[in-house]
Image (cartoon, rainbow, N blue to C red; front, top):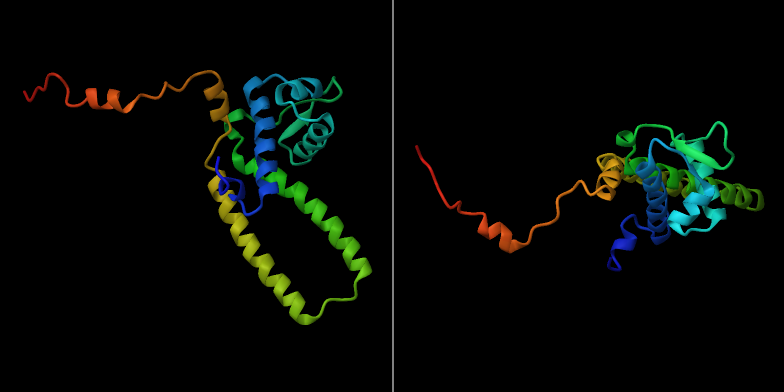
Length: 178
C-alpha cells in the first residue's frame, strides 16, 4: 500500500475504519453461518475488545449483524454472505462517523450564535456535493461482495500463473482447422 491508498476515500481515518470493519465482517463471512463471540473476534483480529464491542453494536444497529439469542457478546450475520458487500461496511463506518459529527455539531450549536445566510448556503452546497459523492461511492462499493473473502480463505481461487505460463499456452501445440 502506498501513501495515496490510505486517502482513497479522502480521509485516512475513514479508510482505516473501513479496513477494520471489512476485516471484522470478513471473519463473520469466513465462519458463516456460525456465530462469533467477542473473545473469538479479539483472537482473530488482534483488535482491542473495546473497539470490537463498539463496532459490533454499530453493525447490529445497521442490521448487518444480529445478537446471538442465547449467548451474550456473540453475534451472527443478519444476511447471507453473498448479500454482504463493501457498501454495507462503508455504510456502517459512515453511520458511526456521522453520529459522532452530529453530537459535536449539537454541542457547537449550543455554544455558537445562529449562522449567517452565507454560512448556511455554503453548508448546503457542501452537503449536496457530499451526498452526490457518497451515492457514487455506495454504487461502486455495492459491486464487491464480501463473500469473496470466504472463497479466498478457502483457497477456491486458482494460484496466479506466471507470465511464462501464459506464453507457453499460446499458440497451442496442435492447431486444427478441419
